[in-house]
Length: 374
Image (cartoon, rainbow, N blue to C red):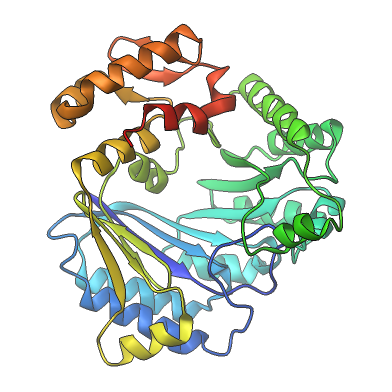
């Protein structure tokens, strides 16, 4: 099995916290879609004969694509790849794009899962983030998507904004429950380089995030969503009725995937490959059939570190048997470091699975780095 990720590098406006590759100019959108279809065709052998079980249109803002552009991409995939009849096909969308007409087009185009970038149901937060939608549009997009049969639905929320309080964050989570959303991705606000937020930090202008508030709201998230029957199957992801994101779960389990589009990454089990993050150059290179990318063959150390990095974030954790069988050179190091973290109460061992404790989830990145081989 395998997955396909397609990066759509366009947005209406730049959110203050975002460092993903995108452009706010849509003038080359049609040419870029043509280039994406060309790359899909040229790289059809990358995954061998693997069946495609997940397709993910991310960005950027894929909901800016019109019906014909989505159809071009989906038709190209089905022409050159073997796609499972029950493949999960996800499209990331902004609430202000999801009119009833748009939702009908997406459904007709084969999209069966939506990931809506809500970020907050509070207008103060949305204004601070420089989002293009408001709280009313956030709520209505979810209701209309569900009414049109998008049962496999996910939303993104961001906690730790300087405009957010414990009560306003609780209000966000209460709305999640009221709207009966089956999957939520909750991320703590972070300061990424080359963003408006990073500039504010550097120049000491504007309202800035607070680490203590971030930690408090993460604790509230875990507690409240657990009370409402959500399973925290990955540090930032919660699901009801096991409606996990299959695409992201496969990524964490190191299933191969093909990344299409500017800045997109690919993984075949032994190497990583990534495309240039430049729309104009990407279009020009694909026009002559020569996609520009870089490739890294992963060493045994790289493969071990990536296994720890991706697996430890999940509820399934790292498996001792997998370490011994697939990463024998680092099994002793792994066992030693794990025991130190167990002694600190940060990790736990259940049968052969090593997972984060509740306390360990607050320090997941730090704990993971302790298990790395440098």
